[in-house]
Length: 500
Image (cartoon, rainbow, N blue to C red; front, side, top):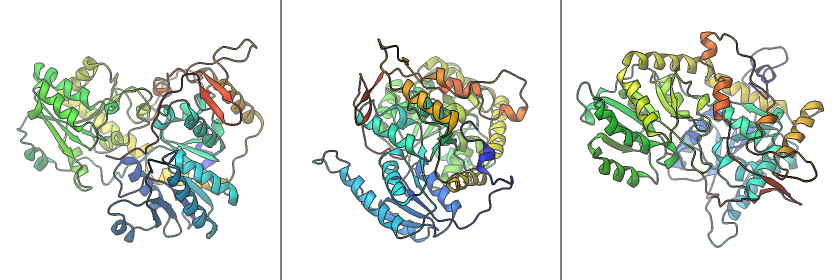
């Protein structure tokens, strides 16, 4: 694990960290029963980290009262809504979060403070943590790093991440972007991969009743997608591929689980292509039914793509499919290379290329033996690399590490990385000019090629990391007293990501 080696996440005697009652505070706008993989992941992390000594400050949402009654942690809910006439609209959210977080933190002795996202939660958690002399750990998801433009919000995000005691990156792509684009000290970054419940998602779960409910006949294939209905997920590419599959003699249907702004667009597209009878928009499904849908399908597909910096940071759904023994089709954009190993646990193609998407779908549904092999590889990879206990041990050890202090070469390299990402694109004074992701400053170059064992081939590889490194172009300049801004600042949205 570049950044923080796994050995640094263990006690000095090399033993496995012992689960003890350690009081932590988590600040997050996204928490169950809010829908979405991020909310599910946060809920699982802190259930496993402890009981009532773990406090969570989060948003009040429908169903929260009943949900919190049975929750093992202590959950504090706030009404967090934007006010249109305020500037910025989120000012009241920041004020409420800060007041509640500070009150909870001052009245209890927390060992560390976690933040679900860099803004607004990370800024709030950092401010409170510094007031109390506690370490702050901020989750980084990937998509927020590249789709917030290059204005003042981007500068604030850079500043908060650079001051965190630990940045919890969800993929190699996210880590590389933090270093290359935001200039974060690599020593502050730990790649803590998402995990799934290997008992909940497993091979052999009967899905015949669900297939019958769709009207599928024996021999018909079912492609499944799960995620928020938004353009970068590539669901429209799967719909566009259905007629091409039919031309190849593949009788396939497409089940899509999720809600979002693209529902009407996807329905209209299916009608235009004459495949409405093959598209099944299922909306939100129950907690118990989701694993059954993975059991009902023949393969999972989400050929994601980058749209103006909006990209997939990891893709927890790929791990769910793998854990259920299903091969996955992903795009090559973003951090999906940490979730899907091309040719081993599934296929990765350019989500912008319809021919590539259709070809990959045809390959997976047309060769059941290869699909089964990839599905078994995916399940084994999850069991070896993405277990809950491993993740919780890493989170606990990072929190117990305390405040981060950059010294010696690491401090110098971090300073150089920030300079490289913040100087003008061209300078008459001879300053270092950098465009793109600052790949020339990557501190963990790909090692020389060598034969890999089967188990190594199932782990994220340097090749996959190289494919997922950011390719956006930017030229940044210093704004005195504030931070970074680019010469080509774009508009961005500060609304929180919604779940599916």
